[in-house]
Amino acid sequence: MKLKELQERRATVVSEMRQIADAPKGDDGDLSNEQAHKFDELRQENESLEARIARQRSLEDAERNMQGTPVTGSEDRQWGQARRDYSLTRALAGAAGLNVDDGREREVQQELARRSGRNFQGIAVPAEVFEERIESRDVLTSTGQGSDLIATDHLGGQFIDRLREAVVVRGLGARVLRGLTGNVDIPKLAASASTGWVAENSALTESQHDFTKVSMNPKHAGAMTELSRNMLQQSSPDIEQLVRADFAQILAAALDRVAIKGGGANEPDGILETTGVTEVADFAATWEKVQELIGTIEDEDAMGTAFLTHPKVRRVLRSTNKVSGEPEHGFVMDTRDSLDGWPVARTTLVPVTEGTPDTAPLIFGNFSDLLIGFWSELDVLVNPFESTAYSKGNVKVRAMMTADVAVRHPESFAYGELDV
Image 1: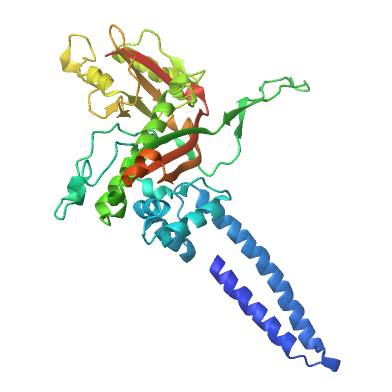
Image 2: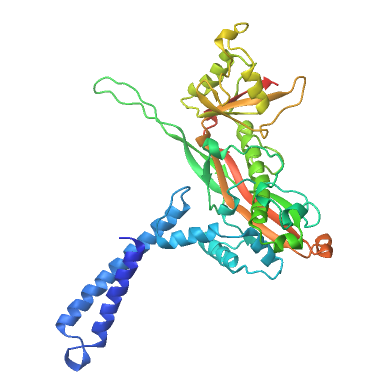
């Protein structure tokens, strides 16, 4: 039975128990033997229902926390719709003290806090708001950069955004862990027990398992921008989409960048900075070296799922003959989006090392072995009293993300640095 059906049955049982208790038929105002027997049956059924309801609630909470698992109960459909109807600009305007109807947004924030079990600093923003991508920009004003968005006959739906980096890591299959609270240690089996063949009546040699762990700790990234008072008061859905996408891109791009490399001050260590990830020496744009790169993964009993690289590397592979001097055999990379049958994702977030010549990596691996953990996908804090913003009637807005990156099996990744 579904949760709603269990709750309805519990209400019926309690109602029947009340009817019996309010109309005793025994001596001295007590229940008759038949009533007492029926009451006990109902009481036992109610206790069973309470346990089943608790289990169902626990199950539905677990399903809500599973990435990409829909929950079909009517309550969750309403909650999902409320998250999708959330307006970031109304939430920002309400936090700035402007006269807007932000009741839905405040209710959603309260429910997010209740479900996560923690208090957010600033505005708790549902992840659905940022299903696009994330970056910050300069001050948006109704008379300056934002003027073309507020005119009576503007084509807001045709807004021309700046060129942005491709955000690809999650699309390659990285595992996303949400709702984390404390530091995370994931146990890992480093080595199995050993096997051996023995003669009859001979003893096996004892061996031990070797365990280790993969650790993740919260690390913080953020962006800060300034929005004008008029921008927050506009009701145009085009402005809503602009603010959402504009906030979303920089943090998504920042996360992809550290997932690929990272390792800087206060940054997670990404694939290229993880100890145990193999670099193929003397890498070049040849079919033999590409096979060596793939083989490096397969020799460790891992199975790669995709390549990841910079667009400059793709251009080199697409213009280098598979067999030197024999163009009839095609290029090392014969199609624009695959190499030896594996998909190739490309983004300028893959680092280029300056030199003579410059180099950039071609990464191959099993991207489901890349973990991305979130303690907070996005908290937004509005400050209408910052000195420079206050004098103009504007508000400062700060967006923060708390996350970490880890590799489950370093042996699942390898890379080669290619001259570009």
